[in-house]
Image (cartoon, rainbow, N blue to C red):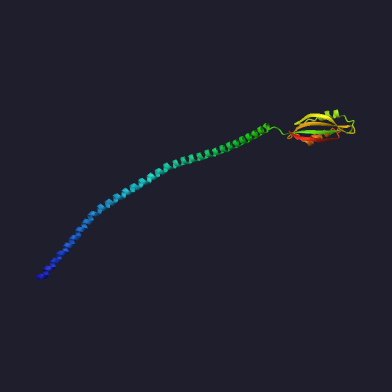
Length: 206
């Protein structure tokens, strides 16, 4: 009996100690819970405040950036407008330069043409009358009255043809770019009352 009573007593003491330990742990947990909750609340409040501040800063930055972007956009638009006008002005200047270059080229061409001596040809013409009674003096007078730009009459004389007939041999100098020999012959033949034919006796470039 004494042995069994001792064991039962120790068992009861162990249970009582375990129960007391559980009660103490529960009390500690209960006392720590309000502090943890308060700490959590404080952290949450701080996080919320930080989030609100960040949102306000972003909003303010957005309000500031928007006018700045508008200003930048306006400046860029102005730059684009200026660039467009600059392109137009550049195009007009290019056209003026081209016109000036062409004008200078034409001027240089005219100067070169003026500086270069005109090509000339010395021509000897034989002008025959209808018969031995043809007035060769009158014929020469009418021939010399023919005027053309670039035509200069020279020496003349009478030469025997045969059977008592003579012909008028007359020299002239013509500028090749201005006078056509064929046209000159046609003008002489228009003196048809005195002129029967016109022949080129000789030609020589000067």
